Length: 330
Image (spheres, rainbow, N blue to C red):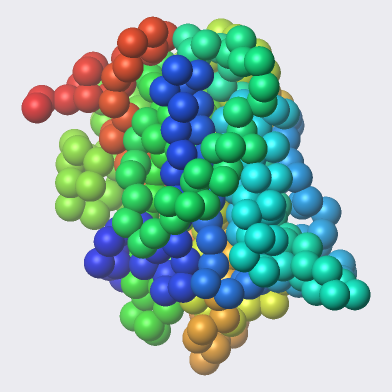
């Protein structure tokens, strides 16, 4: 396995990502768009999720494919970003056809970023506009770090961000991850190495290697402000998966969060993973391929988490330093 050409989730052909950022509010929205509807699923392991249209992603539900997935800041206010995306897709003639009407299927999830130093005294919810703008910006290449839904993200002791990574499997299948890192826990050890360091390719997030100074009995570093966290992610593949298989992919990908964030999946996090499958490549060996896809998804997600924090940039009013400010050598 090796990273794809872009080392982004858009190495999965047929997927595009767009970001929209409001620097004053310190927030934003990120959209994953398919050239065509794609199979999607979700698995939630955090204790405080915020979601839209996730019930329909269960394998027994009527709708098996979606048009887009949305990640946003803003806590419950941010769920409106998906409405902006749905409106724009409907205007393009996309969506689930019902009696001559088109209803775009746009599940979404949010992070809590209301205590990050931005101006939250808006007169009108800004997230619908951010959703539309993120959709309009969708392309194969997109920014990481303090952009889109990661613009106002924080971790226990560093500024968070938007991350992505990919892997090309020997079978020809591709896997990618996209994540907003806004965790209760920390993503680095005390000297700046990322918990995900053992999974790093080259120097994609600093090349410092794995954490070497670790006390397994120590109380983990966490945010002091409760209900102010969540890591939300999408893992994607070009494999032809059923919704049940996509659900298993999302379950496996959660291992990547556990590898990269200490602690993860806490009662105060809303940690969840969407899975997306474009269906371009059939599984040659379903049992083996699903095992390897799950491993690749977890690996990509761990790396994407580190890349998001590593790429964060400073801004006025930030409550926390970026990784580069604290540990960088540039």
